Length: 140
Image 1 (cartoon, rainbow, N blue to C red):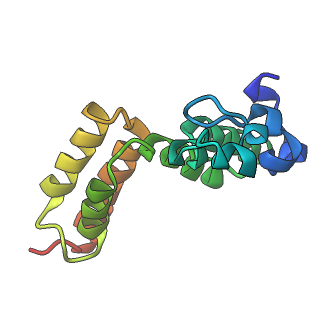
Image 2: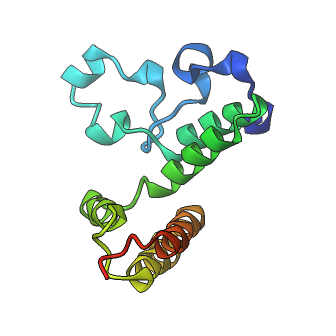
């Protein structure tokens, strides 16, 4: 099935379209059994959500005209490979009064765009920088 053909009837994917869900190492949900775990065939990487799974959920949200939710799934898909420590730094900078100025957020956006191939998330951070500037939310 082409991802573009997903509908609300396919949600939740794990229950209704388990055939489409694969882990990073290619394992299907059916491969993730207690017996496989006991044999050492299942690793943490097999249990983590993938960009593809998040993107499919975004596609489903779009079919229901829930574009904001779809955008959230798309940005989340971009963040899968961003290290957690860096995500926490971004979170801290996005708290009002934490970033010194708009350039601090622009640096984050540039890094997301160039290092992590996360253009939608970079645009989101840039938009936050504009809003923070207008509202005087920088450390100043």
